Image (cartoon, rainbow, N blue to C red; front, side, top):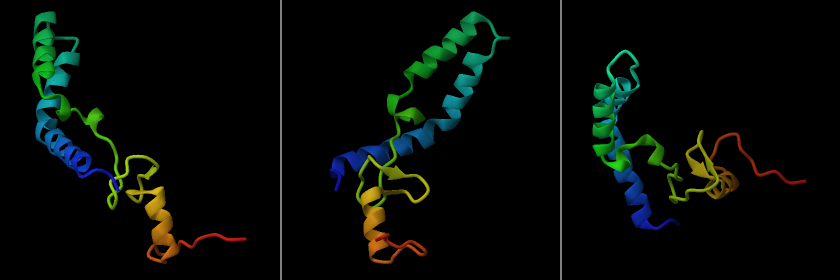
Amino acid sequence: MAKKSMVERELKRQKLVKQYATKRAALKAVASNQELSVEERFKANLKLAGLPRNSSATRLHNRCQLTGRPHAYYRKLKLSRIMLRDLASFGQIPGMVKSSW
């Protein structure tokens, strides 16, 4: 089980990313527009740098929905490998059985 503080920190980051998504996208569009003057693009870059760091989508990290584990994460199922195996062993994932030979 992951620390509660790490899970909460990740949720906080998700909220910030959602909150600043449109503003960040608009500033990025201005900053990368080659038709604008250098001063305008520089101002857009400064405003972009002034936004909270945690509002950037690259700071997000996938975590298991059940345990909060950050490693060995399956995107399709939103679970870690350990929880996937446990749920499959108990027969709680349809169509998935533990292999044995």
